[in-house]
Image (cartoon, rainbow, N blue to C red; front, side, top):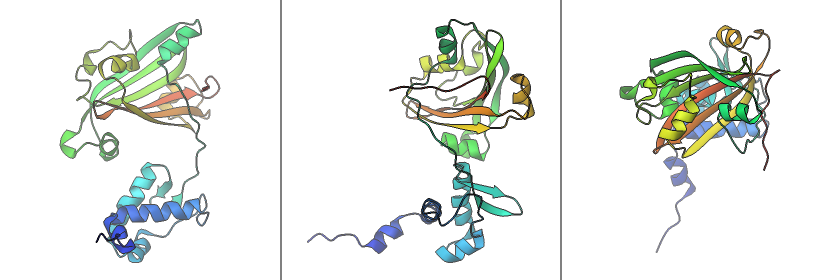
Length: 243
């Protein structure tokens, strides 16, 4: 006779760090923990779940990477301000968008380099420490000689080994990757964020002016192909979609 697994067995099968993440998310979603509120310390959560602090640290670190929590050194961990999300039905190559408006596109390559991935990028690319080598490019896109986007992109060499040999003044990284690494899936989010000095200078904007940032992760050939942050001056750009 078959037996139904007990609730205890199901809980035990869930990794401890995931149980902690689920608990934190439930407290936030239920309204028990409000935006900006400090959550219990790592030590307190370790006692509550009877686990090592490193297990709690992993759970909180992942929630911080997902922008659910905000960790402040020396002060604690706080519920992050939640960002409004919107769905875009179609994501197009910026050169095609500009041409469709009857305007002139120009790309200006700022950086093209081999890059040793840090821990956050390794997690995003689902790579091990032995696979730290990535490609990194920064391109400014102009519409009629007005800068409207800084494209900061990291690329997996396994899916685009010839990336470093490309001329990104004559083609966009998006166009090249679409050709050599056909898209299998994409995750993205749009948020308002203040630019750093470099981005502000490249976009010819005041550092006090906010940007609209599209953060995108694409998959191809069964693995993460690229991770990019596309910065746009909020006063000069908007995202639209229809369905």
